[in-house]
Each structure stands twice: as structure tokens, then as C-alpha cells.
Image 1: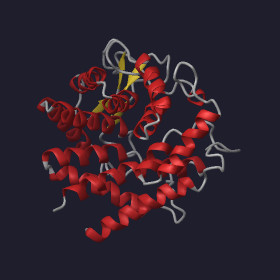
Image 2 (image 1 turned 90 degrees about the vertical axis):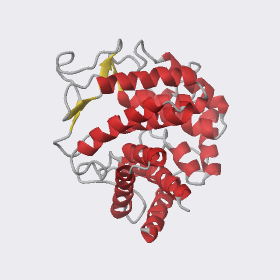
Image 3 (image 1 turned 180 degrees about the horizontal axis):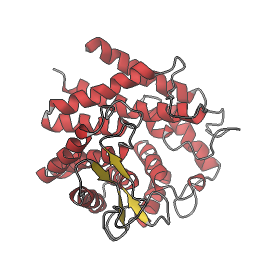
Image 4 (image 1 turned 120 degrees about the vertical axis):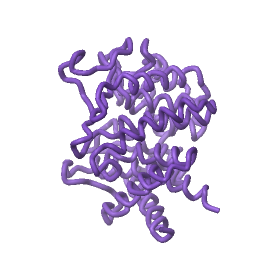
Length: 319
């Protein structure tokens, strides 16, 4: 396994270098044919991969191009709270408070009555994805009150689940789980089917682990286990699909806190998936996805974070 871990680390490093190969001389990350809003993950991915200068150049470009609006939104993101949550962490961990403070102010404005956030500003329903990732950001920001409110929303979502074979990941703004009785188009993870949006559970589990670290309240570990148990019931690709990375890092954190070997194996399963499916250039694309550059780059950003940070956790625990 030691040899494979070195292979995993090299794959993560290659994924970061692949992304950086597209950075423009002025630090920017928008060019003809590439989406104008797809630079939200790079600052976090690059710095965690040891490329702080490139990440800072990207943030300099954002400031110089005046892409931050007065209300704290990045103009290209058009109210996408999930992308703002990604961007916040990248900027804040680099100490670019001129960017992170306004963005967190905007995210605070998106928190609804139940503590959740919609994916996009104005959406009728809140979603686990944008909610939990913002909650992790709130902890980095030092706002435990906000993080607690958001975590309570995720816990409520878990407690309201009516079936063991599904996870409904949307709620009304006042906190009612959006099953078919609330929304005919209710969205959920189906444990009997492959290629599910596993990230909805993964982010929530990660937030529970981080809330435990911040508070030492064992209830958060209990809820993290609840999310893990659901994820383990999912289809056999539960930790070897392109949407599995968030729950892989959550599992690595849960293993660190509890020693649950199932969680460790789950995270390592995703690391194997990353190493085994990377292209020779360093990106990733799968048969159910379009053959477009954004796919290769976006996966490279995500996977370098989820697998890379999982490996660091395991390495830190080795004697």
C-alpha cells in the first residue's frame, strides 16, 4: 500500500500541474471556448498542491479585472452559492481577506430561515451541496454561530429522511424535506443505482466531522456516522465514481476521529479510482460525460483536493 500511496500523491500533483498549464500570463483563467465562471476551485486546489504563487496570481487577476461586485459576489458566478463557497476557501486560506470577507458576507445573505442555502440565489429550495460547503467555510472564517445554524439544517435533513434507500437532499426554506409530497420533481440519491450525486451526502458528513473538531460535541460524530452509513449502503461505485470525492475526504476525516476502518478503506478506494483513471496529461473524463476541456480541468481541481487531503490525513497518522 505504501507504493500505491506514492502513486496516489503523484496523481494529485499531476492534476494540479495540469490545471496550472492553462493559466494565462496575466494570472487569469478565462479564454476562448472555456466557461467564464469556471475558476472557482483553482485557488484552493493549487495552494493545497503547493503552488501558492500561481494561486495568488489568479486572485490578483480577479482583483485587477474588477470581477468582485460590491455585494461580495463574483460577477461571473451569477448567484451560484456553491461556487462562491469554493472560492471563499481558496481566498481565505491564502489570507486574501480583501476577497474572502466580501464573499462570506454575500454567502451570509443567502442563509435562509432553516439555516440552508439554495444552490443559486433565488432558488425556491435549499440544497445540501451549497449548504454544507458554506458551513465548512464558516468554520474557517471563525463564525461558529453561523456554522452551527448550517449544521443544524443538515442534521434536520438527515433526520427527516423517510426511506433508507434514498437520500433527499433539498428542503424548503422553512426546513421541510423536499420529498415528492412537497415537490413532484424531488431529487434524491438512490442507493440501488450507480452514478449518483454522492457529493450531497459527502459535504454534509465532512461538515459534521469539522463541527466535532470545533466543539467536541459527540452528537456531531453520531450524525457523521449516519451520513457514512447511508453512503456505505449505496451502489458499489459509492467511492469509485467521479462524484465520490467529497465523501472520500469526509470518510478520511471520520477515520481520523474514530478509527473506523470502513471509512479509511472508502477513502482509499477513491484514491485508487483517481490514480487508475487519470489521463496521461493529468486530467479526467468518463464515458458518461462530454469530451470538453472543462470536464478534464474541473475533475483535476476536485480530485487533487479530495484525494490529496485524504492522503495527508493518513500520512499524519502513520507512526
